[in-house]
Length: 87
Image (cartoon, rainbow, N blue to C red; front, side, top):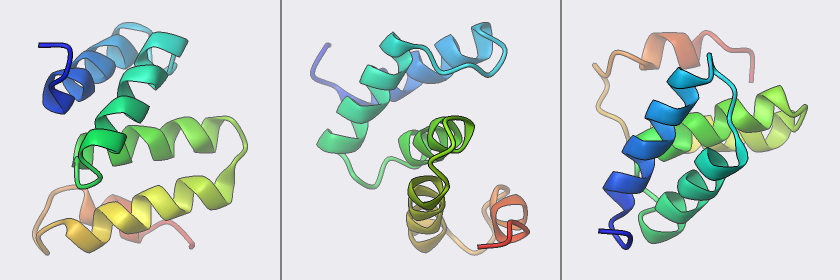
């Protein structure tokens, strides 16, 4: 279903892993779509932050990750890694 944000973020994650962490144009478009359709999509927020950081857009990356922290359960496995970043 091309209108499903969950599928878009799953596609993006698979593409990023296949490209050894590089967020290509198709993956980026899928992440933006997923985030637009569901601003609480944790996977999209994480990878949008990763993409922004690798592009040198640090403030944007931090905002995505702060949003992810805010909507995540306290015991989410990514919280320690994100919290260790010096915002």
